[in-house]
Image (cartoon, rainbow, N blue to C red; front, top):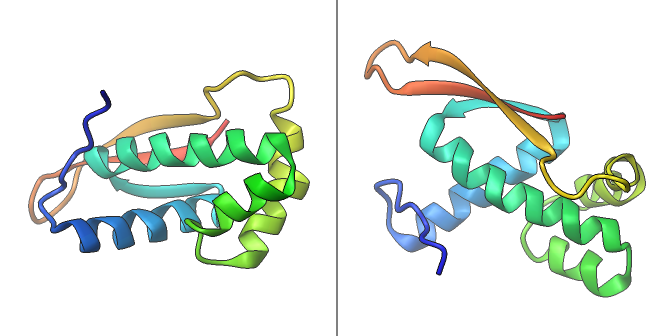
Length: 113
């Protein structure tokens, strides 16, 4: 059973934060955030790309139920998913940047491969 990180937030806030992070990540192809948030974002984003590779209507509706912007979903299905057609997972990469100024949280850059 997969254990989800709580990230110090109630369920509704955590879900909203992850939806926004995944949407931004798929929109820009790269985000900078803390390591724990990036690991959770990576899990969900890779599932969205895998769904987009199927390319059918049911998959599109499943992705639309999580990603908040329709143009991001269109880009995901038209441009991003075909790029990873031959790849079986591992669509993202993380680079450690260093501690964040202020609270010294470990930050990373999460990007599409």
